[in-house]
Length: 558
Ligand code: HEM
Image 1 (cartoon, rainbow, N blue to C red):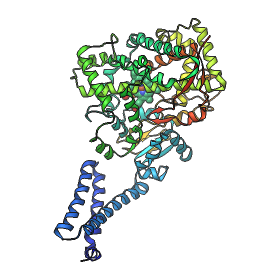
Image 2 (cartoon, rainbow, N blue to C red; image 1 turned 90 degrees about the vertical axis):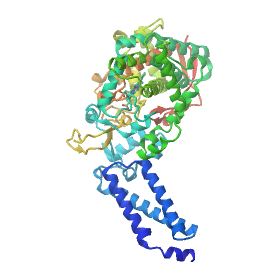
Image 3 (spheres, rainbow, N blue to C red; image 1 turned 45 degrees about the vertical axis):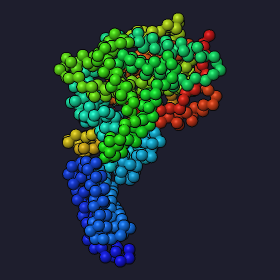
Image 4 (spheres, rainbow, N blue to C red; image 1 turned 120 degrees about the vertical axis):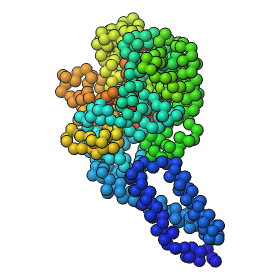
């Protein structure tokens, strides 16, 4: 028989009706319960192999004819499955009445392009301008740009969204505080962490923060020749990472001493590049990738080894480190020592406690020197010089309420920079409960929908802040006097509700101390080759923001 005759001889029931029926059955069963990605993939591959063997071995067709018929059945199956899914999602889904781009309603894969480019926050801002306050940004996902909805979303115990799965390292069931799914589990774990961030514990961290800040400032003073450029971003990464490792687990990469980024940290930074896309693709891809070698394996094993040593030897570099509190609480609550879980906690500390504060400080400096020819820089320096003429501000000073009152412009400079460039700029996912979610206007979001508020969009919304694109620290101090719009509750740079940043006060301690010392000790210019607009446009979202090297020319202040 010729190839054509072979093909014509096949019954349409097998090549067409069968795959269409199977496709409908697959779709229906997926409506009843979430399919296991690995099983579906194996069944699909197995079905294709079986079809090829039946045609080739049992029916005696040639290789090409068997391959052709098998591909045709597979293509009909896939076309039907995706066709049904597409039509259902766009026209019949419970979110089909919400506005948004059709590509995002069809598939989360459409978000790949802007997530790989790191431009999710800016894209969300465009979508909200185009479609309104509630936008459909995924088959079952909405972005909600309504300040009045923040507490209903983040403070009522809604479960975390699927994005958090991509952060779960080690055994999948070994979760860190941040990746625990239900609020009940999260709240219980958070109690183990709370002691480590109370004001009495923070007092114990002051000397360490101060020593590291002084180390960074001294190293920069040595290099401040008024000619060579320094990437201040590197120094801030080294500073925040050395602090959080020493305070967290009592060990350090000594990056401020070596003026070098540790290999393990480079790997974290590289793997962060895929965090947003990975978190936003379908769960079945993440399930499959979980079987491949982890890109964060080196830092995971550093964390594991460190935790093991830490449990055995106790705190090494500070008297009471953050793990002293976590381990103490675990024991007090009768929890067993689970090495996987503690490794995940150490990993969380490294990830959450360094880039966030490091980027924030870099951007405060950038905003201070690029706004109105350094007006804010000069104003801040004046405030600091008045309060600390000897330029001897300490970590204990920045922690005191009285100093914070005297240095209100310093805090305003930090908050205003975090408003424009929140370290975590995209929305934090939650899932609506079986009762759904009532918005302030009375409309209801159905149950089981992924929702978030778009931090970047909200913090730059003119309904929340007058002239929202301008860096104007004064708005944080004079809001009552000017008549400008200032919606404090729209500022969610540290998150909201019971999952909001536990390290906020430690972050402020680092930022206030370093920035005060920096502004009082250096005269600073942006390197001539850096164009401020290009620098701003190149800020990317990798869950935590990424920026270009911040090249500065430093001179010692007279
Ligand atoms: C400018 C500095 C910082 C910013 C802007 C920031 C921002 C945030 C945000 C937005 C969240 C919420 C994430 C979510 O719900 O998914 C968060 C959580 C967290 N942050 Fe920070 N952070 C900063 C500094 C720090 C520092 C210095 C530490 C620790 C040493 C830290 C530790 C954590 C931890 C452990 C969580 C998880 C809390 C939980 O899930 O209950 N952060 N941070």
